[in-house]
Image (cartoon, rainbow, N blue to C red; front, side, top):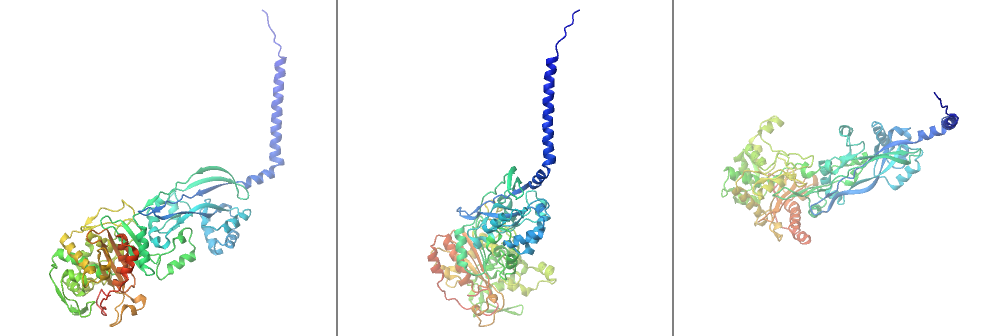
Length: 613
């Protein structure tokens, strides 16, 4: 057998070279590691500690809001906000003093904001909004000392019409800890809707926040972006308001305190929702300073209250057509049944006066509405009783919220015996019913409720749900009164404007036919011979008017309440007249000239009446 011996020396040489290369590479790697970990250890340790990851919230631009004609009610403007990263804050007091020095706020207030931010752990919080360019520059110049601070570009709300629509659009406010703890979509410091449309449609307008994870250096400068989740902008919203009518209402009401509501009587779509005085919406575009908040809440005129759906007033004589229609339907009165008004009447041993000294003479139902005869409705209240008056008022939606989507609406008050026993711990006394018959006493309504009630007169007898966004109103429900009864009350309201003794005759000068009812809600009982103009403002009666037009096919119902306005005919009725004129195509300058014309009206008596000039 023959054996072949291979020469292994070439293979061994190659293996030796390979092994040498491997050893050389390992040596180089070991040397590099030694350099990095031993010689350059302090340098790399410092750099590693200087670079940080930051999760920065990206605010979603809120959705825009436009009226029925596409005019902007609410949109956004660019702004800068200041973020604090609590885990990087070394000295709270030092940070607070720096921020106070550049005008963010008083030291104590800024310290409170910083402590609040610390409770959010690692999450960044917004501690200031609407930074000026000077403040942005100051923070950038001190970046090395205050790495915990970061200026972040964002958007803030813009309300072109300002206070004219303030109560409609509402306020933004910082999310509460309870809100963001229960909703992962919310972040500390985020602004959310607190009132108005901002709150009612927060889910639509608010959008969805995003995030970006960045690497920053020792000076807080961004080095790179590791991850980004883009925000989802809020969706646009179209509302039923007509801003041309809203502006006209504000101009007509002027500096007076009160509220105006105008709505489409068949659908309930709100065209005007005005409350005065109002606040400046830009105050709530960012984080409101406590001082400004205290000024607003301590204002005796309560500019934060939306009087259109939160203020309660006695309806005065504006409730008379409601009672009249229901009395006809129930058989308590007939259209031709009349009473003689001498200016005073005694019922249950107590004297009651009509607003017109000397009385109106014989009046039936339509005439009683035209001249607003208190005596007629005193007798009507006596014959009906409080339980029937209460049920009639509730037929027209009084005593309950209307269901508008805005938060904070109150339901008003319709008194009866059960209410008296529950609230006052005493039965209802028959004598109290007489005042309720003319809209005085413990019966309270909102301007919005009055508009809804009168809409039922002109839309065929249906209660609508007022709404600011199409599709939000519920189907109308019938008031269950015969058409003849509603028509009789409407004829009376037409005579209020067109009749020779109507209490709103000044509106007869308009080139389109309108109708309605004046009302005066007493604040105090004024003395004999004293006119409302001689009283201090806070003692004057509230002036009310609810009207609609055109008479043959009403397209708009307008309710006006002027607090301490005194005379409904000369104060409240012209406001409604200007809005109706604008809606019906009458040039505003023509309407303004026609409605300032003085109409000779009789002077009110000292007591007992719900109506006066």
